Image 1 (cartoon, rainbow, N blue to C red):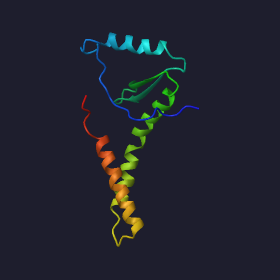
Image 2: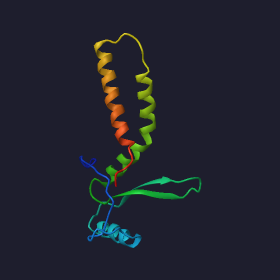
Image 3: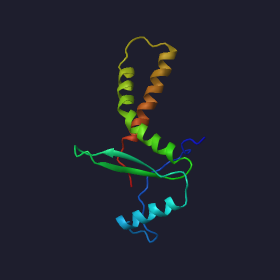
Image 4: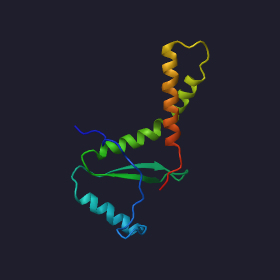
Length: 125
């Protein structure tokens, strides 16, 4: 059974071998070439934009043995982000005398908050 591809993951802008930006034709050729080499099916993450009802590809996760799991992990991260923020805000609003366990919980929440802040940063590429 497959699972999500191990870390680290990174977002990159695909460019041609000479460093120039890929055109739509270049990108479609790149995706087609990666699809030719696999046999696990081809997976992408899609999202709706505005109210037009049209699906837009957010990313392609390819067709390797982990592609299905990678696509699912990316979609779930986005789907649960807001709920995680709400849960952390509720936990961080707790006031009172803190036991050692509560202090560890507060530290864990603070760590989770910093991870979320990193996720919300503007992409560098």
